[in-house]
Image (cartoon, rainbow over all chains, first blue to last red):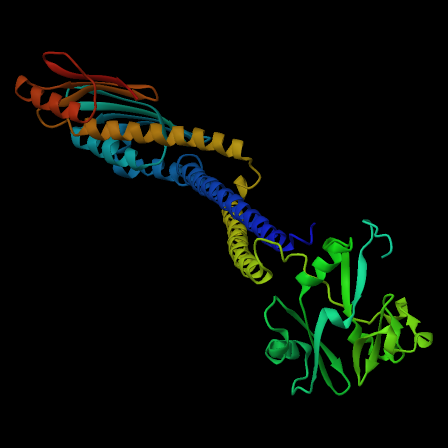
Length: 135
Length: 291
């Protein structure tokens, strides 16, 4: 009986192989797509984590940059400049409008510290600025 | 006719009345070449019919044989041997050396080799005393396996062509599958390379990485918001509008800007365009909102 239908059997076997190969290709394609998407997302996340960590938490130049405020302002206006274990407390008094703009708007904003709290208070023509930050 | 068992398969030695035979010296070396020539050489002897062909190499040429398998099967069916019980068929010509003396095939006939050709003769013209009987020693070395697929919907050639096409397609799909598998390896290598670039993150699981990403993203996003608010607030200040108080922390901002009636509408408009929340006041601009 089997020999009688050997031609059909041959075609059927080839057909089964074709179907198996199609399933194999489909399975590999789906797996590649899923893995590629996951990998791209993971690579992007790893790179982002590293970049953000470096920017906000592992920046070794922050303390140096904060200390450089002494070159911008006269010492009398720097009431407090405490830098301890990746935390800083800055208190500046008697700033005129230009100095406030320069320090708050440009200088401090450009230093990659995590601002915990910042306050500004005007007293006549002069300003008091207090900053608490960490990195 | 002996009893036929359905459980056995039978080898048959065909006597000359079941085939047409011609001996030819052909300029060919291989059986398949002789087989190709057989139909045209035997054409005038066969006439109409669905013939198959066999070619047997002999010392001085080729023995070409034509046989009609349908007729042979019909003959055997009549005698109780269905075609599915046929294992191999042989031709008496293949065992010509065994028929130098007559061999009895039934009550009336015997076969004998005359001039190198096996022929069937009535027993009446041979010496009955000399007649041998057919035994297994007469079985030639090579036989023909009848094609059991002659009743198939497709013939062997068509089946082979279709199967070959399907196999080529299958090979294509399989090769593509392998290509995708290799591509997977490069994706994994990509992840490994990135992890090697950042060894501190190498041993972290996906869940830990997600958690790390979330916490770092929260910090990054918050600090960018704080800076954007400060930048927008600084653009609200001028000679005519000065900050009275400002307080900004990780949750909210609160600003009071002293200005005059002339500028306040303009400042409110700009503050709103910067998504700053403006409180309804008369003499100064007050901004308060969450981060």
